[in-house]
Image (cartoon, rainbow, N blue to C red; front, side):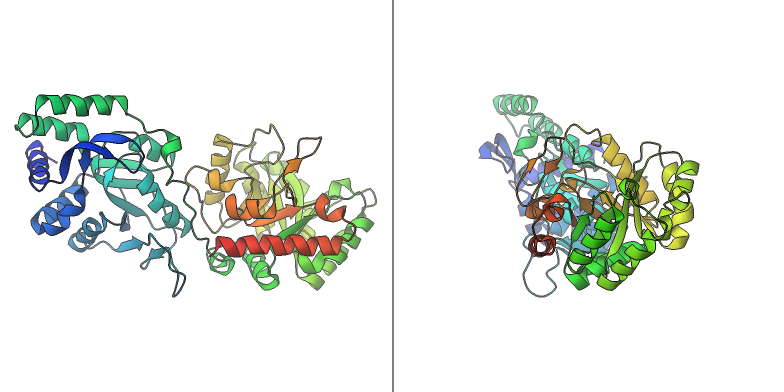
Length: 477
């Protein structure tokens, strides 16, 4: 935008009293000597039209997007004008999700992986943009850019960047103050107060971003099954729906006989059974066929918790060969990404033709583990690049990941679940089914000792299943 155009726009905003000076409390909680009220622009069609044309031209030519979505409510008319004048489809985010009809958070027609540009009128901390990005991403859309009329220069750009969103601004607040002072619309003292305020409040503390961690209505498993590219992942979603179960039993027992016995007892309650085949002291080659027979009888999938971690060629042989022949009987396997994406290539080479699925270890539940931060982000990137084979993650708190929630096609499975929070002497940390599913954004609770050590494992498994499913229903309401 040219300097003349910017000055003209600033003066028009001042003329309609969209720029106010005094003492105002902002959404972020801080007090400000300047307030921008852009709701007024709906009553000035020519100004609205000018803003809508200029805001798009302020984007870099390399910015790609398939759709636009205005942050409710002030940016909605701007986004509408942008959509109509540029022939770009628009989506609407509901600020209040209704409990009748379709009960959607995002209204409009779109496809998974389409890129949506967020349009906002004003950014301070970036919270409102993030509140809109969260449900868009939860619906399977890609959000990488946001464009705003005015940037208050108080940390919004940095906060958004931390969440994977680049902010593009037409006007910076400091520029607006400078122009108004130069044109005689602002006295020297007011300019000094505002500039001092901006200097002292360059970044709104993250603790003030109360709107970022908004709870988004979760997509139902059957909806997410349609987004899943992997056959086994899709089947797991379907089993979860049919059995009303998001419970995985961690069958960490010492013998195959014990494992088959517990699988028979709790099979009706679980959607997934997790094994550690290399700890079975009485393993025989027919173990896999016996376990598969029980799985088919009770309609659950088998997950071998092998945690592959070697180079691609080695893990290919480990998964397919050896005495365990894991790919012959396990529906799902898992892997660390410490050796890089080649490990996924190796496992996919033999696993995908057999219709298997892979979970990546993005986080761990043991105290002091190193699977966090950049490691977790790298796991998400590898999963996106191999979404035909990777069905999701072993995770602890996916709701806390940058840019969360991630692609809803991916399944989040969380270990270390018990009825009460706590830990053991070996550093394992436990969380309740409700906190794991509702608060932390996971999909499957992995329970071991809480069921295996129970006096009645079948009854304990039923209680865990009911609690896990209740939390899922609450997340979707």
